[in-house]
Structures are given as C-alpha cells and as structure tokens.
Image (cartoon, rainbow, N blue to C red; front, side, top):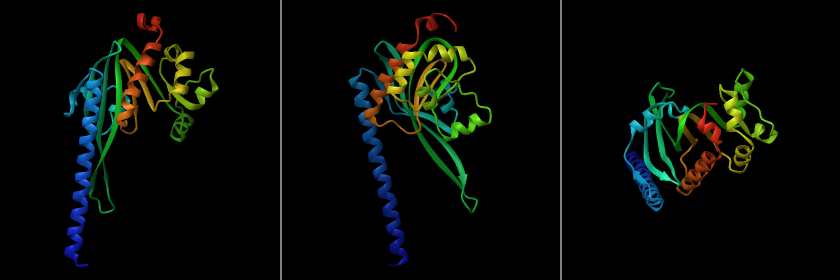
Length: 225
C-alpha cells in the first residue's frame, strides 16, 4: 500500500463514521419528536443554554463547559409540567505531547416542577466511588430498609426531609424501579443517567418521575419540612 492510499482510506473511514453519526442523530431526533407528538408535548431540537442556566443548581448540570440541552420535550403530562432533554458538556485533556483534546459527554434528564422549594436531596446507586467518599466523611443517610441502604447512597443536609421523602412507598418503588441519579433541589425533581436514555426509555423515565412526584406526601407539599 502506498502512503497516499492509506491517507485516502483513513479519510474515507472518518467520513463514514461522520455520516453514520449524523444518521443516528437524525433518527434519534425524529423518534423523540414522534414520542413528544404522541404524548401531546412540545419538542425542539435546537441547543438550549438558557434551560441549563435555569437548572444549573442540579449537580449533574454543573459539569464541564459548553453546556447545553437539546432534543427537549416540554409540556404537561398527567397533570404535571415536565421536561425531558439530552445534555451535552465538554471536558479537556492533554495527550503525551501536550496537545489539548476536547472530550464530549452526553447525558439525559427528565424533570418536573414542584409546587414549592425543597432542600437538596440526592439519591444515587451505592458503588465503589461512593464508598470511598463515605470513608473520608461523606454523610450517607441510612434507612430501616437494609436493602435500600445497601443499594443507594442518600445525601441531604436536611436529614428530616430525607426521611420524610424516602418513606416506605418511595423506598419500595426505588427498589423495584432503580434510578441512576435522583435529585430534589429547589422546586425541581429530576432523574438523570450517566448516558443518554434510549428513545424507548424516555417515556418510561417520565412515568417513573411522575410516579415519584405523586408519592411525595401532601404535608410536605403544603408545609416546609
């Protein structure tokens, strides 16, 4: 093989990867738009930095730079205002020669607005990293359910609110319908994942979100904890 042939082959391979990526994103966008339409919700594909700025108090939306939402579904579902969106952010690294490299990260979120503001509460799966954090002083709140406490790390500065929110029905729900990252802060309840939801997962995550919203006790909604 000549050097010229190898260069052309490399260019064709990268071009093919680019076309395949574009086609995949187009099909994903069309499928999410169709889902939004079937649910009577609004869909927009364009980058939305204002939405991320508005929800920037959520832990996972603070990461990296060049942050924006896209493939955004919005509207009222089962009587609740919801948002579902893909999220992009960038981090940077250097190779062995000191050349800067941009790393693109993609996640998905579903959120619903709450009728009043709440303290921060984070529920995430127990894992190796979380065990290290706990070992150096991270305050993991434990519950009567040993299975739940083993499966999830629960963090909140307001322990009473954490116990009020994670009552028996919520614990049972989260054991049957696992979440990757659940956060309550301000007037927002959010579920996210360290990858993008598959299109067929979006409605399922929205259903989980609304089910959890409906499990919040009325006395918490009506009065500060």
